[in-house]
Image (cartoon, rainbow, N blue to C red; front, top):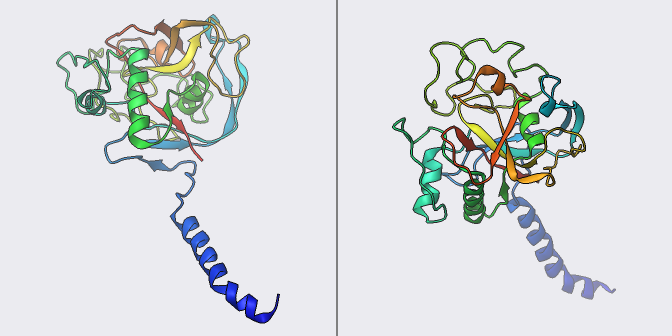
Amino acid sequence: MNRDRRLKFLPILLCLFLAATLARAQAPAAHKPGEVFRDCPDCAEMVVVPAGEFDMGSADAPVEGPIHRVAIANPFAIGRRDVTFAEWDLCVAAAACKFSPPDHGWGRADRPVIEISWDDAKDFIGWLSKKTGQTYRLPSEAEWEYAARAGSNSAYWWGREVGAGHARCQDCGGEPARQTAPVGTFRPNAFGLYDTAGNAAEWVQDCWNASYRGAPADGSAWTSGDCGLRVLRGGSFANKAVAVRSAARFRYDEDVRYYANGFRVARDVK
């Protein structure tokens, strides 16, 4: 190519270079482990959990075993707190969530939304995904336990004993709990998550299986088993301390609304 032709194409090449540079500058930065963010001003606050491996389950109950190694290959984002009544009521106001649960006189606003079925939670997730343009979901059971443990291997993320002042449950210290507490009342775990023990039990994506035999080892949701029943984790204010251990698990029918059950959201990050 002679000099004149090179000069002719120079402005075009310069424009292409500037366009590519601008596109890179405008592209959203990848979320980093430990980062806290929101996808919209009134969206749930999310925290990015790092990739890693952990031993899932315990030897304390047949439904919690066998203990097995799970590898979480990629970071993911999970709600820093349970979904609140304030967040749920926005979905109801948008006519995307059909059910407006009662608060039993305990207050709405920053209390965890309760009386939510697994099916109800999916309605909220669909609305939030459409609102933000991001693909929200329930966490898998493995992701939930990994995030709740936050690197710990003790019964509770804070230690071997329940102690006092760590969570809201029937025998978590002080007077027996008779209602939920506002989200974030107690200090967060090492990953920055609040209320992974007690307060409101949390739906996860997985179908119910009575043990971990044959469970996925890659952190994905277990989509076979009794899928009319779905797993809940974390226990609630209405449970004894044994049910708010990091490994504790139980189940309900997916369409059941119970006054101690809520959820938190999750999504993949790039």
